Length: 255
Ligand code: PEP
Image (cartoon, rainbow, N blue to C red; front, side):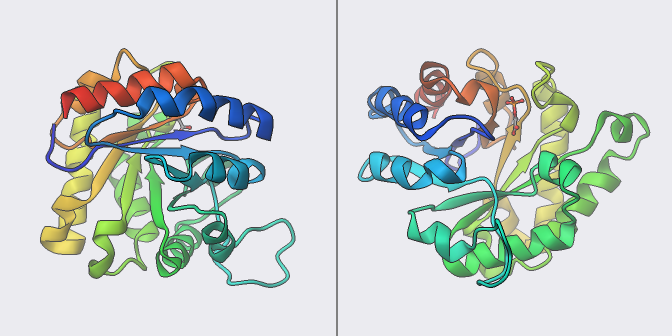
């Protein structure tokens, strides 16, 4: 385990009505009230942000959005700006998730603009990178992940490294039940760490790198035991309050 403060985030994707989201918070908040040195983040869909933000207000759970548009305002039907996310109390926002890259054609340049917009609004971006199975098997992992990193972080200044979180999510492990072994994940996290240090100097050592891809209560501990794994970005297992609490509390005991 590293000395960086662990960060566990639940990405709810397109799940949960407002009522379902509030029911989650009601069960979850007391379960993690005594968690130790760990940052806990919930990323509900846009429609539930305001109500979940109010429900967790004053607790130790932080609010995240799953996406943002980098423009300040204007004719962007269906989009949400950083200022709007600040307005509902977001302190983190996920950008560059592989589903958005694959399904909505998001480019590294667009993701870089999102990260820059978030940082200027005072929101911490969680920037996702990760290779497909085809890319890994073709020996292109470093080219792909390195390229995504360089492109997506192109607009982040060295003075903002403390506000940056990177998530490594091998696409083949997302929602498949197939997790990278802790050693496989560590190998890529170490590569990402080296690239972050090339880019940001010593500041790169302080950047938290989450692992994502079928994280569960029973595999989080061995993942977190790796020196460059500083947290988890959790999909499926983050939808259930008890399961996500077990993930969070396990870290708290280990930290
Ligand atoms: C994700 O979508 O970011 C994710 C890691 O999902 P899951 O935990 O379900 O694999």
